[in-house]
Image 1: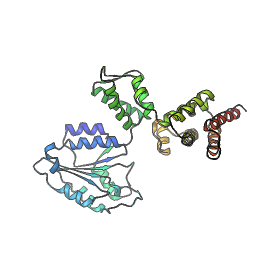
Image 2: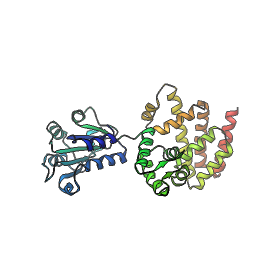
Image 3: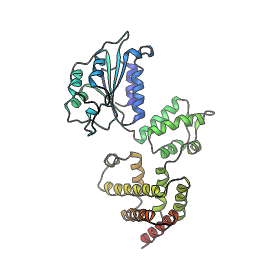
Length: 342
Protein backbone atom coordinates (compact mmCIF):
# COMPACT_ATOMS: atom_id res chain seq x y z
CA UNK A 1 0.00 0.00 0.00
CA UNK A 2 1.05 3.63 -0.40
CA UNK A 3 1.46 6.19 2.39
CA UNK A 4 -1.96 7.77 1.91
CA UNK A 5 -3.74 4.42 2.15
CA UNK A 6 -1.79 3.64 5.31
CA UNK A 7 -2.80 6.96 6.93
CA UNK A 8 -6.47 6.26 6.21
CA UNK A 9 -6.27 2.70 7.55
CA UNK A 10 -4.54 3.76 10.76
CA UNK A 11 -7.39 6.22 11.42
CA UNK A 12 -10.16 3.76 10.62
CA UNK A 13 -8.99 0.41 12.03
CA UNK A 14 -6.62 -1.08 14.61
CA UNK A 15 -3.03 -1.31 13.34
CA UNK A 16 -1.36 -4.53 12.25
CA UNK A 17 1.38 -5.92 14.51
CA UNK A 18 4.20 -5.58 11.92
CA UNK A 19 4.88 -3.10 9.12
CA UNK A 20 7.70 -2.91 6.57
CA UNK A 21 8.20 0.60 5.19
CA UNK A 22 10.36 0.19 2.10
CA UNK A 23 11.62 2.89 -0.29
CA UNK A 24 14.05 5.78 -0.71
CA UNK A 25 11.70 8.81 -0.72
CA UNK A 26 12.77 10.36 2.59
CA UNK A 27 9.90 12.85 2.90
CA UNK A 28 7.31 10.07 2.51
CA UNK A 29 9.14 7.90 5.06
CA UNK A 30 8.93 10.86 7.46
CA UNK A 31 5.19 11.22 6.78
CA UNK A 32 4.67 7.51 7.47
CA UNK A 33 6.65 7.72 10.70
CA UNK A 34 4.47 10.63 11.85
CA UNK A 35 1.34 8.58 11.10
CA UNK A 36 2.62 5.76 13.32
CA UNK A 37 3.58 8.19 16.09
CA UNK A 38 -0.01 9.49 16.09
CA UNK A 39 -1.11 6.03 17.32
CA UNK A 40 0.41 6.78 20.73
CA UNK A 41 -0.96 9.69 22.80
CA UNK A 42 1.66 12.37 23.40
CA UNK A 43 1.63 11.85 27.15
CA UNK A 44 2.46 8.13 26.69
CA UNK A 45 5.26 8.42 24.12
CA UNK A 46 8.12 8.63 26.60
CA UNK A 47 7.25 5.19 27.99
CA UNK A 48 5.61 3.50 25.01
CA UNK A 49 7.66 4.51 21.96
CA UNK A 50 11.06 3.05 21.17
CA UNK A 51 13.23 3.99 18.19
CA UNK A 52 16.37 2.06 17.24
CA UNK A 53 19.05 2.61 14.62
CA UNK A 54 20.03 -0.92 13.64
CA UNK A 55 23.29 0.28 12.11
CA UNK A 56 24.31 1.44 15.60
CA UNK A 57 22.14 -0.55 18.04
CA UNK A 58 21.44 -4.25 18.54
CA UNK A 59 18.42 -6.01 17.10
CA UNK A 60 18.01 -7.90 20.36
CA UNK A 61 17.50 -4.65 22.33
CA UNK A 62 14.83 -3.48 19.87
CA UNK A 63 13.01 -6.82 20.01
CA UNK A 64 13.19 -6.94 23.81
CA UNK A 65 11.45 -3.58 23.78
CA UNK A 66 8.86 -4.89 21.31
CA UNK A 67 8.11 -7.88 23.58
CA UNK A 68 7.44 -5.62 26.57
CA UNK A 69 3.89 -4.80 27.59
CA UNK A 70 2.73 -1.19 27.18
CA UNK A 71 3.14 1.01 30.25
CA UNK A 72 -0.26 2.42 31.26
CA UNK A 73 -1.42 2.52 27.66
CA UNK A 74 -3.13 0.51 24.96
CA UNK A 75 -0.08 -0.31 22.84
CA UNK A 76 3.63 0.16 22.31
CA UNK A 77 5.29 1.44 19.14
CA UNK A 78 8.77 0.18 18.29
CA UNK A 79 10.48 1.61 15.21
CA UNK A 80 13.55 -0.16 13.84
CA UNK A 81 15.43 2.17 11.47
CA UNK A 82 17.89 1.18 8.74
CA UNK A 83 17.83 -2.64 8.98
CA UNK A 84 20.76 -2.97 6.59
CA UNK A 85 21.21 -6.64 7.50
CA UNK A 86 18.12 -7.33 5.37
CA UNK A 87 19.81 -6.02 2.21
CA UNK A 88 22.56 -7.38 -0.01
CA UNK A 89 24.71 -4.33 0.61
CA UNK A 90 28.42 -5.04 0.92
CA UNK A 91 28.72 -2.24 3.47
CA UNK A 92 30.24 -3.58 6.65
CA UNK A 93 27.80 -3.08 9.53
CA UNK A 94 29.08 -1.60 12.76
CA UNK A 95 26.80 -3.93 14.72
CA UNK A 96 26.42 -7.54 13.63
CA UNK A 97 22.77 -8.57 13.86
CA UNK A 98 21.30 -12.03 14.33
CA UNK A 99 18.45 -12.44 11.78
CA UNK A 100 17.14 -15.51 13.64
CA UNK A 101 15.96 -13.21 16.45
CA UNK A 102 13.73 -11.34 14.01
CA UNK A 103 12.46 -14.64 12.58
CA UNK A 104 11.41 -15.75 16.07
CA UNK A 105 9.57 -12.48 16.65
CA UNK A 106 7.84 -12.59 13.25
CA UNK A 107 6.45 -16.04 14.07
CA UNK A 108 5.22 -14.91 17.52
CA UNK A 109 4.69 -11.13 17.51
CA UNK A 110 3.56 -9.22 20.59
CA UNK A 111 -0.04 -8.23 19.83
CA UNK A 112 0.07 -5.07 21.95
CA UNK A 113 3.09 -3.78 20.00
CA UNK A 114 3.20 -2.14 16.59
CA UNK A 115 6.63 -3.03 15.17
CA UNK A 116 7.72 -0.86 12.22
CA UNK A 117 10.82 -1.56 10.14
CA UNK A 118 11.84 1.66 8.34
CA UNK A 119 13.92 0.41 5.40
CA UNK A 120 15.18 3.37 3.28
CA UNK A 121 16.35 1.10 0.46
CA UNK A 122 15.22 0.31 -3.07
CA UNK A 123 14.83 -3.36 -2.20
CA UNK A 124 15.73 -6.06 0.30
CA UNK A 125 17.64 -9.27 -0.38
CA UNK A 126 14.88 -11.71 -1.28
CA UNK A 127 17.31 -14.63 -1.05
CA UNK A 128 17.38 -14.32 2.73
CA UNK A 129 14.91 -16.42 4.65
CA UNK A 130 14.20 -13.62 7.13
CA UNK A 131 13.26 -11.29 4.26
CA UNK A 132 10.87 -13.83 2.76
CA UNK A 133 9.23 -14.34 6.14
CA UNK A 134 9.06 -10.60 6.79
CA UNK A 135 7.28 -9.95 3.49
CA UNK A 136 4.82 -12.71 4.35
CA UNK A 137 4.05 -11.50 7.87
CA UNK A 138 4.33 -7.72 7.56
CA UNK A 139 2.14 -5.09 5.91
CA UNK A 140 4.27 -3.55 3.16
CA UNK A 141 4.20 0.25 2.82
CA UNK A 142 5.76 1.56 -0.38
CA UNK A 143 7.82 4.76 -0.07
CA UNK A 144 9.62 4.59 -3.41
CA UNK A 145 10.12 7.89 -5.29
CA UNK A 146 6.83 9.03 -6.77
CA UNK A 147 6.20 9.27 -10.48
CA UNK A 148 5.18 12.64 -11.89
CA UNK A 149 1.37 12.06 -11.92
CA UNK A 150 1.41 10.84 -8.30
CA UNK A 151 3.57 13.77 -7.16
CA UNK A 152 1.26 16.24 -8.93
CA UNK A 153 -1.84 14.70 -7.37
CA UNK A 154 -0.46 14.72 -3.82
CA UNK A 155 0.81 18.30 -4.00
CA UNK A 156 -2.45 19.55 -5.51
CA UNK A 157 -4.39 17.72 -2.79
CA UNK A 158 -2.21 19.16 -0.04
CA UNK A 159 -2.68 22.66 -1.49
CA UNK A 160 -6.47 22.15 -1.52
CA UNK A 161 -6.39 20.86 2.06
CA UNK A 162 -4.53 24.05 3.02
CA UNK A 163 -7.10 26.19 1.19
CA UNK A 164 -4.96 27.03 -1.84
CA UNK A 165 -5.42 26.52 -5.59
CA UNK A 166 -2.88 26.10 -8.39
CA UNK A 167 -3.80 28.41 -11.26
CA UNK A 168 -3.20 27.74 -14.97
CA UNK A 169 0.36 26.64 -15.72
CA UNK A 170 1.55 26.92 -12.11
CA UNK A 171 1.77 23.18 -11.43
CA UNK A 172 3.55 22.57 -14.77
CA UNK A 173 6.08 25.23 -13.81
CA UNK A 174 6.65 23.65 -10.39
CA UNK A 175 7.09 20.20 -11.93
CA UNK A 176 9.57 21.53 -14.48
CA UNK A 177 11.63 23.46 -11.91
CA UNK A 178 11.84 20.54 -9.46
CA UNK A 179 12.16 17.71 -12.00
CA UNK A 180 8.94 16.34 -10.44
CA UNK A 181 10.83 15.51 -7.23
CA UNK A 182 8.12 15.19 -4.59
CA UNK A 183 10.44 16.26 -1.76
CA UNK A 184 11.35 19.49 -3.55
CA UNK A 185 7.75 20.11 -4.60
CA UNK A 186 6.53 19.74 -1.03
CA UNK A 187 9.27 21.98 0.38
CA UNK A 188 8.47 24.70 -2.16
CA UNK A 189 4.71 24.41 -1.61
CA UNK A 190 5.16 25.73 1.93
CA UNK A 191 7.01 28.79 0.59
CA UNK A 192 4.47 29.34 -2.19
CA UNK A 193 1.59 29.28 0.30
CA UNK A 194 3.29 31.97 2.36
CA UNK A 195 3.90 34.06 -0.75
CA UNK A 196 0.29 33.72 -1.94
CA UNK A 197 -1.37 34.08 1.45
CA UNK A 198 -3.48 37.09 0.38
CA UNK A 199 -5.66 35.39 -2.25
CA UNK A 200 -4.62 31.73 -1.79
CA UNK A 201 -4.05 31.43 -5.55
CA UNK A 202 -0.71 30.00 -6.66
CA UNK A 203 0.07 31.50 -10.05
CA UNK A 204 2.72 30.51 -12.59
CA UNK A 205 4.51 33.83 -12.06
CA UNK A 206 4.81 33.12 -8.33
CA UNK A 207 6.38 29.72 -9.00
CA UNK A 208 8.81 31.17 -11.56
CA UNK A 209 9.81 33.94 -9.18
CA UNK A 210 10.26 31.79 -6.09
CA UNK A 211 11.39 28.30 -7.14
CA UNK A 212 14.97 28.38 -8.48
CA UNK A 213 15.95 26.64 -11.69
CA UNK A 214 18.43 23.83 -11.07
CA UNK A 215 21.51 23.50 -13.26
CA UNK A 216 19.87 20.46 -14.86
CA UNK A 217 16.79 22.55 -15.75
CA UNK A 218 18.90 25.23 -17.41
CA UNK A 219 20.99 22.61 -19.17
CA UNK A 220 17.84 21.06 -20.63
CA UNK A 221 17.00 24.38 -22.31
CA UNK A 222 20.58 24.62 -23.55
CA UNK A 223 20.48 21.08 -24.95
CA UNK A 224 17.34 21.95 -26.90
CA UNK A 225 18.97 25.07 -28.34
CA UNK A 226 22.08 23.09 -29.37
CA UNK A 227 20.08 20.39 -31.13
CA UNK A 228 17.94 22.97 -32.93
CA UNK A 229 21.19 24.74 -33.93
CA UNK A 230 19.98 28.01 -32.47
CA UNK A 231 23.41 29.56 -32.01
CA UNK A 232 22.32 32.90 -30.54
CA UNK A 233 19.93 31.26 -28.07
CA UNK A 234 22.48 28.61 -27.06
CA UNK A 235 25.21 31.19 -26.51
CA UNK A 236 22.85 33.39 -24.48
CA UNK A 237 21.91 30.46 -22.22
CA UNK A 238 25.57 29.52 -21.85
CA UNK A 239 26.42 33.07 -20.77
CA UNK A 240 23.59 32.98 -18.23
CA UNK A 241 25.07 29.85 -16.70
CA UNK A 242 28.49 31.49 -16.49
CA UNK A 243 26.90 34.59 -14.93
CA UNK A 244 25.24 32.28 -12.40
CA UNK A 245 28.76 31.36 -11.22
CA UNK A 246 28.68 27.85 -12.65
CA UNK A 247 32.15 26.68 -13.63
CA UNK A 248 32.77 26.00 -17.37
CA UNK A 249 33.94 22.44 -16.72
CA UNK A 250 30.87 21.81 -14.56
CA UNK A 251 28.55 23.12 -17.29
CA UNK A 252 30.26 21.01 -19.92
CA UNK A 253 30.19 17.91 -17.70
CA UNK A 254 26.43 18.24 -17.20
CA UNK A 255 25.97 18.76 -20.95
CA UNK A 256 27.98 15.62 -21.66
CA UNK A 257 25.93 13.69 -19.08
CA UNK A 258 22.67 14.90 -20.62
CA UNK A 259 23.69 13.93 -24.15
CA UNK A 260 24.90 10.55 -22.89
CA UNK A 261 21.45 10.01 -21.39
CA UNK A 262 19.77 11.07 -24.65
CA UNK A 263 21.92 8.60 -26.59
CA UNK A 264 21.00 5.81 -24.19
CA UNK A 265 17.32 6.68 -24.45
CA UNK A 266 17.46 6.85 -28.25
CA UNK A 267 19.07 3.42 -28.52
CA UNK A 268 17.13 1.62 -25.78
CA UNK A 269 13.73 3.08 -26.67
CA UNK A 270 14.37 1.85 -30.19
CA UNK A 271 14.51 -1.64 -28.73
CA UNK A 272 11.02 -1.26 -27.33
CA UNK A 273 11.79 -0.52 -23.67
CA UNK A 274 9.05 1.36 -21.82
CA UNK A 275 9.52 4.65 -19.97
CA UNK A 276 9.33 2.92 -16.59
CA UNK A 277 11.83 0.24 -17.60
CA UNK A 278 14.22 2.88 -18.92
CA UNK A 279 14.04 4.87 -15.68
CA UNK A 280 14.83 1.77 -13.63
CA UNK A 281 17.54 0.48 -15.98
CA UNK A 282 19.33 3.85 -16.22
CA UNK A 283 18.65 4.77 -12.56
CA UNK A 284 17.16 8.11 -13.64
CA UNK A 285 14.08 9.91 -12.33
CA UNK A 286 11.05 9.03 -14.52
CA UNK A 287 10.40 12.72 -15.25
CA UNK A 288 13.86 13.15 -16.78
CA UNK A 289 13.23 10.05 -18.89
CA UNK A 290 9.90 11.49 -20.02
CA UNK A 291 11.51 14.78 -21.12
CA UNK A 292 14.42 12.93 -22.72
CA UNK A 293 12.13 10.71 -24.76
CA UNK A 294 10.24 13.77 -26.00
CA UNK A 295 13.58 15.18 -27.19
CA UNK A 296 15.06 12.10 -28.87
CA UNK A 297 11.92 11.56 -30.94
CA UNK A 298 12.66 14.82 -32.77
CA UNK A 299 16.33 14.19 -33.54
CA UNK A 300 18.39 11.51 -35.22
CA UNK A 301 21.01 9.32 -33.58
CA UNK A 302 23.63 11.14 -35.67
CA UNK A 303 22.50 14.51 -34.23
CA UNK A 304 23.06 13.20 -30.72
CA UNK A 305 26.38 11.47 -31.47
CA UNK A 306 27.90 14.56 -33.11
CA UNK A 307 26.86 16.80 -30.22
CA UNK A 308 28.21 14.32 -27.65
CA UNK A 309 31.58 13.95 -29.40
CA UNK A 310 31.82 17.71 -29.90
CA UNK A 311 31.35 18.29 -26.18
CA UNK A 312 34.01 15.69 -25.32
CA UNK A 313 36.37 17.64 -27.58
CA UNK A 314 35.35 20.89 -25.85
CA UNK A 315 36.10 19.34 -22.46
CA UNK A 316 39.65 18.55 -23.55
CA UNK A 317 40.03 22.11 -24.84
CA UNK A 318 38.74 23.58 -21.57
CA UNK A 319 41.36 21.60 -19.65
CA UNK A 320 44.27 22.36 -21.94
CA UNK A 321 43.59 25.72 -23.61
CA UNK A 322 43.88 29.33 -22.50
CA UNK A 323 41.01 30.42 -24.75
CA UNK A 324 37.86 31.67 -23.06
CA UNK A 325 35.13 29.10 -22.28
CA UNK A 326 32.60 31.24 -24.15
CA UNK A 327 34.75 31.16 -27.29
CA UNK A 328 35.25 27.41 -27.02
CA UNK A 329 31.50 26.88 -26.71
CA UNK A 330 30.93 29.11 -29.74
CA UNK A 331 33.43 27.02 -31.71
CA UNK A 332 31.61 23.87 -30.64
CA UNK A 333 28.33 25.26 -31.95
CA UNK A 334 29.89 26.29 -35.30
CA UNK A 335 31.57 22.92 -35.81
CA UNK A 336 28.37 21.07 -34.82
CA UNK A 337 26.33 23.05 -37.34
CA UNK A 338 28.91 22.46 -40.08
CA UNK A 339 28.80 18.70 -39.49
CA UNK A 340 25.03 18.58 -39.53
CA UNK A 341 24.90 20.65 -42.75
CA UNK A 342 27.49 18.50 -44.48
